[in-house]
Image (cartoon, rainbow, N blue to C red; front, side, top):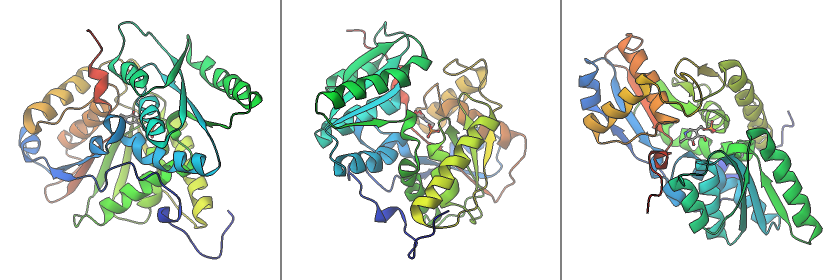
Length: 321
Ligand SMILES: Cc1ncc(COP(=O)(O)O)c(C=O)c1O
């Protein structure tokens, strides 16, 4: 790791200033009662981060798009599934930053998911591909074509899960660490790893154990990604960081985006007990992890457990008129 003379923090890096922070932390006493007691349960509302219907991508793209603009980029490209929250928020923030946006998306576009409809409203150009493995080469080809025509493209990797993006979750970690409540555990949905990398970097050495609940890949694969991104964060900041990485891959079910009975129960419980709407792809499965582990008695009365709501609720809708 390259150690610079003065250690930096996330404030040292330019941001768009587009998101709304700190996001609230609310207690969920009725959910706790429905689970038969146990630790106090809290939720951090990162579904309220603002542009593009909020969620975790706003925090990451704040940093990534500000750097792209500072480097003179005039067009942004990124990749995802047809309902990608990352793609939608990239489209929203690009519109706000005055950058042209191209999204390379795979998956079934009929009926049109709400997220895709918004991508178009935000003015993004959508390039459909059939399979996930066609996204990256297509993005590279379009970026080359744009470059050849005199444009300055910035290609953002999946989920903006790069060290610069993860700084957005160091900022969230700071909000959590300074909230006045000592959390024994923090659960959140994890996939491309940037959210978890920022959280484990920001909460390294704190009493809060971070548990990423996988939406898709194996615990080994995600933990390796998180470790790589967290090492990149340490390099960016010129600090030594010793992150503790735990990924729980026990709630994926049959696969990415395929509903599970535990996830459906979590959707119902959060909505009926707390008036909180989760999304079926990421947060419901992560919440199912919290519910199962609280029910199993992993945490005792007097402990505090935080669930990070990372957004994504538009997956519940498609455009019908
Ligand atoms: C709603 C939601 N939650 C969680 C995640 C996972 O975050 P990360 O990709 O940073 O691991 C995503 C990623 O797409 C998401 O859209």
